[in-house]
Length: 190
Length: 419
Image 1 (cartoon, helix red, strand yellow):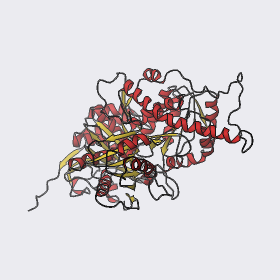
Image 2 (spheres, chains in turn yellow, orange):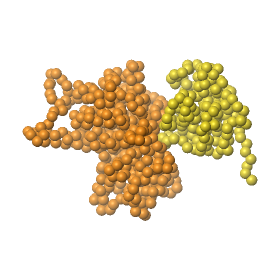
Image 3 (tube, chains in turn yellow, red):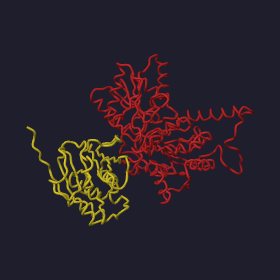
């Protein structure tokens, strides 16, 4: 079982992203379940969504408390929300940011980091800071859990409200190509 | 057959089943389209809204040939459908929580008039305090109104059961309305892999439409329906008793029909669901936990982990809640020595969960047949959208195991008290 928690703000498409990733994993022959968190949803407020994938049937329909990976589609969120809560030791962070690794908010549990300047790329493509498909590309690059091709097929099946398929396909590809992946080396405790 | 062995869908099942990914509300809407109703009436309410939005979209896109009535409230929704059903139409709606409360008067009349309307309840907890979140309180509150009520565990089961519900409701030995209950939040918005049956296969499964043979609104055959009974005069009392006894007979008949329809579904589509009561790892269990709805998935994972740790625990899941499957449950309870029942709603009168309250009646039957009582306790969790996780179920398993050696607590355990 591989568990992903999406962090974003209402309107950025974190819930939609979880669903698109689930479709892509299905394309790859995996079982996938996604579920949004339930709370006060409004544009700009912190939102969370969850995704599980496995080679076997997934029975749990619950929230995720100890994720393998965090996808944070908003660059400012980590300042106001503890996005790292419960992250497994050596877990993965895929973060939208224009900052270099040393300036990114981090927790001791993070082992692998994928960084993508998603907001600026989104402004170029969509003229709006919609980062979800970019960050799916960044997730594919960082983890290899899903292939870029499967994500592309998933997008072809999605209905886009705010932007066309072509723009999102470009966003996906640029997210994949323009993500830098870093392994965090930690000193082993004496 | 009172229980079914659940198997992973095999690759050799009937072809033509498309695999898609969708949320439970969309799965329900797709199932409604497959069942080809003549008329649907809708009023949106959270967390049901996306279900009726999907239904409306299917009709607008020409993928579903049904009249849709966008009524001014739930009382009208069900009243409109009653007219449709009386004219021989296959009818459908969905609601929850306050919407269900607002339609209570026609809700009671539907079962009395034996109209086979299918209605999804996208279950929602009760107000107050204000809540738009999932919980079984709405469906539990109306469990004594003569509707058949079945609860789903997975998105796939939502789809399959929603189609089956029409066949169960319209069966001549049943002729009762059916609620398909899907957990608000966890099933309504939970998105997962679903196999979509082929329309022609579903048409063959449904057979020739024969919805209304007993009270058709037919100008060539005028008749009165829903008469005012005579109170204590004339044949008033016996008329009323005849109605109620007929409803009870239909409810009891439905237990057999639900099993038959599930069996036929399994044969046609290769997916088997326990129709009344499901047993999971119960055969050699010392004790068991009992679940309802979407919580069951996490419960099964907890059971597997507990089994790996050497605990002899099993699970009993109720699918058909109304009518309560007394005989099927009795068979399951005879296999164990202690029971913990997890409810997603509150039974205010008994200070326990409603499913536990229902089960106590079966425990009395068990005691009178075997001469010994089965220690049991009530757990209440998942209220107002709260999660019931594998961790919560480990607490349930541990507390239930303690009943083998210690007296049962009187108070229920509130699982999310500290969440």
